[in-house]
Amino acid sequence: MTLADHRASRMIADPYRLYDCSLETDGAAAVILTTIDRSRDGANVPIELAGFGEGHPDSPDDLVNRPSLLASGVGAAAKWALTMAGIAIDDVDAAMLYDPFTAQVLIQLEEIGYCAPGEAGPRVAAGETSLGGRMPVNTHGGLLSEGHMSGLNHVLEAVRQLRGSCGERQVVDAAHVLVTGWGDLGDGTASVLRRAS
Amino acid sequence: MSRPVPDIDDPLHGHFFAAARRHELRIPRCVRCRRPSWPARIRCSACGGFEFDWTIVAPTGALYSWITVHQALHPGFADRLPYVVAIVELDDLPGVRVLGNVVGDVTLEPHMRMTAVFENLDEHAALVHWTALTESEIEDRTVGRSSPSRQEE
Image (cartoon, rainbow over all chains, first blue to last red; front, top):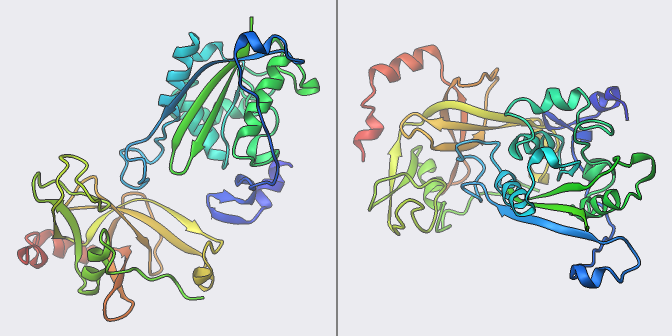
């Protein structure tokens, strides 16, 4: 898809055009959670769930009367997850951000502390979230370009990046990947996955 | 298929639409702490109170945000496309924002002055829409700030 294709697509709800919206997709994904000790006997390189968190905007059930329309719970969730993992946002090598619509990626980049409010757009445009950039985002295409499988495909991509099995879209030496989820009116989750040492 | 209509027996928001049928904009206030409780809830989120007065407020405010919908998300709206959904922050209750459609041929600007327009659906309920407040109306309302609607409280 080119920028021209995007701009030629029909308007759904201004300013979202067709290609700003993900398509809920039939599919299935699964992960196996177990202890680190047991995982070492598995066929694949184990990946550690190093941190996780949950957060909610106030009010959780009403978008219109929040102090900020853009507020979600992802920022608080990411803070918990990063703290539990003992790392800072600058240590994140790649991020799989829940992307039902395009702007949600920009909002989350600011909420998770990657950049200051208002900076996300220019930073994405400058290539910081592309492969080879400062923090590649949604290397699998995300909900928007791979498929909307409720975000579990983001977890799979994080695991694949950490195992080094992503081929031409591999993030070099990926050691920590942040995964976020976004539900309903901005309920947020975040996880930090890392290569088990 | 026709548009969904509000249920005036709804325990939370029924009063809002019934008041709109009388062309009044009413917002619940907690009897205990007097804070507005909007959107309506079973309990006051500030103090936990259970009782509310549905208070008349001036049907004017400032445009906070809006979108234009181009795809019918419910078949009852298909013949209305495109339509605007706006958020208006009320003059009388700063921080309290009410949703509605924008009616009339209005070029929207952030923070522009808006006034409610009531669309009667039947004898029981009306919808609250919004349109631009004209210069002369702004002057009238500034002059008559202790507006008649407030004396009815």
